[in-house]
Length: 425
Image 1 (tube, rainbow, N blue to C red):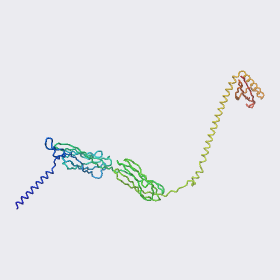
Image 2 (image 1 turned 60 degrees about the vertical axis):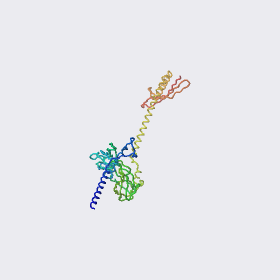
Image 3 (image 1 turned 90 degrees about the vertical axis):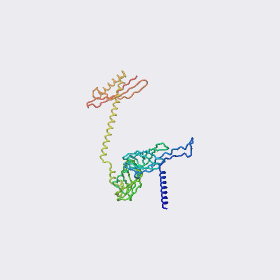
């Protein structure tokens, strides 16, 4: 009985060893060949079925980590990724390359790794230090992981390559700076006043949906929330919040500025506002002020009117003198022209003109003697052309000559005469 028990134990042990060996053989990787759906297909010469190459093994990234929700621009992080052989055959001689593009760089070390072999269904994890460049834009930025490898299928060696893209979110630091509120020098109850705040966006990302709201009591605002808008990178400006205090005293309020950063996160900054409000200034009627009325009644000083009158009189006198001089000069020119015309007509009259001149001279001499002067040097002082008249085929010329001889009184006019000369053509 004891001998039988030992034999059964040996048989069971042998069976277990055989099962373990069979399981080990089955679990070993082995080449897989795809069949065309007709496993019993024969070749044309009656031989066995020819093996058909299986599918190309693909390598994919199944998981990756970068240390948090997002990576701040300019900061370093560790990128770890897991890749797996999704094919049915083993791959070997694998080269893995990581490319960070324009947003990421390798923070020390290399971006290329070598893997000797990766069995079908197996996976590996690789990590490397990286850094987000300071000029990287906010949002998800791509990283490319490339795999180049070889595999044996149907007795022949082949190569393949796959490029996998993963995305890592980058956030620009919030550098939207707002200055302290600038309060007015004076504020009066019932009058609108404005609190201003200067801002600058020093970050490389844009700021959007900037709004200003003041919380508290004792004031009214036409717009409770005043919208400012978007602020581009590097832009500056000011935020003005207009409100009207209701009563005098100290106004204690809080000014809140809300905005969205480059990552789309809503942020709020609060500033206390304490303002001394004075009583409303009384409204005065200018017409009721005696000083103003007195100034209006007095008008301009008296000496201004005197100066203006003197200047006006001088201007008038100057104008009169200039006009009279111009008229005198014009009259003199007209007399000269008439004398020249009369002289020309006298010279052309011939003998009749000479006889008339002699008769006029005799008459003038007799008249001078009757006046008691006895002087024959009377001088003609004025000659006026009385006109010309055309009668038939002839012309008539008439004139008047006045002569005066100085007497014993120093040259007073003693008498005159008229002379007429006529010439018939």
